[in-house]
Image (cartoon, rainbow, N blue to C red; front, side, top):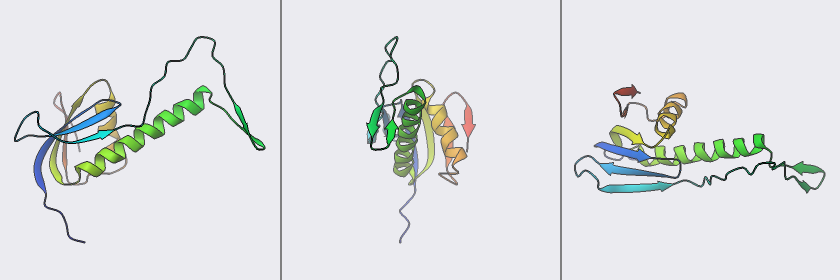
Length: 127
């Protein structure tokens, strides 16, 4: 399989629902957009586990299960973003909340995007 041409740099703007990959040559121009399957839902006071009987097993929607679903959805979202960034040498990450930092930590922990320069805006650098 032939290697694709490496492109200089991009800026990644993200939150927990969408990631926008923008070119540094034309600021603000979106090259690609990745959407998350994660849907946030507020817990209602007094809400308990709403389990469903599935054969001999009980499937619950307790806090632990919901947390794991959220974590898995976020990891899947991050993997989709990584797949979109393989052709770029330099990536500047920015966005809302803690998601940009979580993404940089995910890339570092999973040892993804080897040889790429990843900068978290605010002069924090992770590679």
